[in-house]
Structure formats: C-alpha cells, structure tokens
Image (cartoon, rainbow, N blue to C red):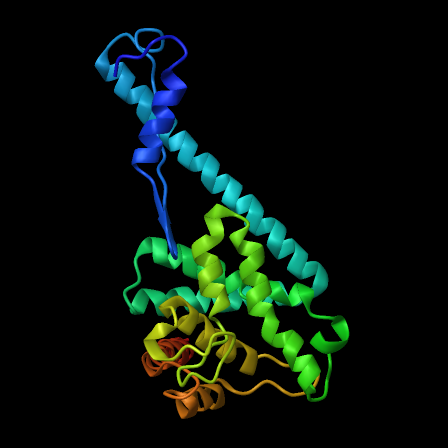
Length: 259
C-alpha cells in the first residue's frame, strides 16, 4: 500500500482493527509483520521474508508476556500455599490428557492447562483461618469460599491474554446438576474445560493426603467419581478420565511383571 511519510503506523493500526473483533465472551486479535519499501527491503521476496520474521517475533513476544504473567500468578499462589503448585501441575497434566481424548484443539488445550493451573487463584482473597480450617465451615465462611471463582476471574480478566481462561476459571465449581456455584449452570452450559478441570481437581485431591484425612487409593477415588457422575460431574469426562487412569495402571503393572 502506498503511504506518505509518517502515515505507516496509522495504516498498520487500521489493518489490525479490520482484522480484530470483540463481543460478549470472545475477542479476536491479530499479529503482523510490516516492512517499508524501499527503505527496508530491495525486492518483494526480501520484503516478504522480513515481514514473516517480524510476524513471528511479535507472536513470540506476546507468548513471553503471557508466560511472565502466568509465572507471576503461580508465584503468588506458591507463596500463599507452598504445596499448591505441585497439586496444580498434577491437575494440569491430567486435564490435558483428558482434553486430548475428548478431541480439544491445540488452542483449547493451551487455555485448559492455564485454567487448570490458575483455577484456585481466587483463594488469594480467602482468609487463612478459613482456607486452612480443619473442621467444617459455617455459612459465613462458605460465603468467602464461594466467591473465589469470581475473584480469580476478575484478576485474570485484567489481562487480555487471559480472558478466555478467566471464563473457564469462573465455572470450575459448577456442578452437572446445577447445584454448584457461582452461576448454577447445568450440563453443557458449563464450559467443557471447566468440566474437565473439576473432575481432574477432585481426583487429584482425593488421591493426595491432607492433614485431616489419608489419601484414597486410585481405585477408590475413581469409584467415587463414577458414583457422582451425572450429578456432580460430567459423566463423559469421568468416563474418559477413568479409562485413562486405568490404562496407565494396567501399563505400569505389565511393566512390573515383565521386569
């Protein structure tokens, strides 16, 4: 496109605006690589090569910015609860394996693993005496706990790169039967990534020791998930996760026998 002196930046901004759109629950952006001719390239081939390099450099820069934000949020969580990052890593790994088997696309898997690692972000706003209470919570304390998905969502929405992740985090405590919080969504109203995280989080929590109870065996934890599939959890997600875990156990036992 022919441009006068000083107009290149305006033209680029207009091109990006034409390739961007925002609405309720979604945002589409664009990356670009721009080259001025003849100042920066002598022929079309060189210009395209340079534009391509700049495009990928911009994408990499955005990815680095997202990773830095992610690291800062996870650091804040680890300072509050030192054992939490290990739990969240386990939830994230199991969620990705489950998401792959459910046919999620690559970009959906990226959002899934981020949401899995950040789904408890809102617990930063829950007082320590509630978060670490060994006994049952009273109604006032439960009110604090039920707010944490909303707090996590608000923190994440401050960054454009995490807006889809924020939507997932908001719904990770919904239930298949509509008895969850904060919105009381039912069934497929709940984002699929949120449904996956909910099941993986429950399985990881049940198979981990807590100060107030011993860890359940893998078989017992799977049996509990299957018992509440269709009420608390999406039965399709429970089925896929259970099959994945049992396949892994079967492979491990076979390896032990061959050794």
